Length: 403
Image 1 (tube, rainbow, N blue to C red):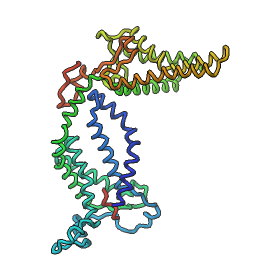
Image 2 (image 1 turned 60 degrees about the vertical axis):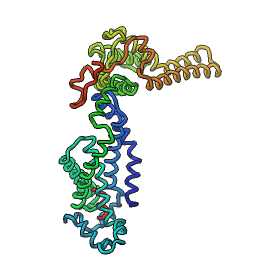
Image 3 (image 1 turned 90 degrees about the vertical axis):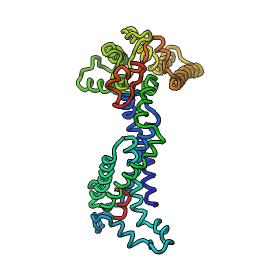
Image 4 (image 1 turned 45 degrees about the horizontal axis):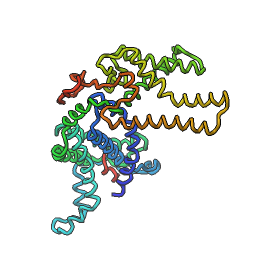
């Protein structure tokens, strides 16, 4: 059993990297479809990703030396069905007439090997039935295909990296793995009684969608600035930038032009949407219910991107200005930067506190009157998956080691 510790620990160590890669796409998909991310769905999805990674590492790890593999002369495949039964009868200490040997036989590798193969696929069957809502036939098919992928990975020498297979392609593994998936399918009945159904999770998410959380807004901001970055890069590559040069004034004008075009003109034409907001189903509206006008957008984003975001740069420029025109004492400089730091800290604390309030609304939104509103209900007929009640609010395996 010690051979299994290395793959499992490796999966646990590598999983945070995988989570970092899939988190933003996962969040965008959830906000796009449901407008919220229930914690239970997140737990299920991430545990499934960890499970799939662990089973894969159990198949390929630990990796041997190429020279060691090249020197192997054993067979690459075992194609006789139920060979593991014959091996158990022949190699184990089990004797039907001697009950004292029964428990001992269950601790021997000739039994544990196929038993671990079966257990390894039980969670897959549970996930397929409970979360992915597959029937028995599709559960059998997907369990078989996932096992076949493992066996072919072993047979190919890890996709040609090794000169030959370093683990055995075993037809018994296909059978036992698939049986494990079937066992998991029937075991999922208990999960379905203890946990809410997929439909209930979806409906709960839709009910929570009216709360436009700070995290949801942050996803929209990340998408918006990714789009802006791509657009600026393409424009620069083709020489399409309206402003060129390396001076500070040119950089400021370019920044203001981008802000005006993307965050003022674009929402005016799309009814309060940017690309990021459209993706996560939120839109900008005025506090009195009307669509914001240009002056409203100018006030909102003028404060945000003209004052708050570049505030650290202003502090540095002012410090340099004071120092150049009359000198500046160390004490005054310390007080000046301490004051800027306190203001920035207050702003960050207010942002964090907003995540725990029902309405994540900041003072620049109250001043401009322009705020974010959930837009999922406005397109409910096309956004909510089938079977979910619309919200009434706003419109191979381990066994291969024997090779």
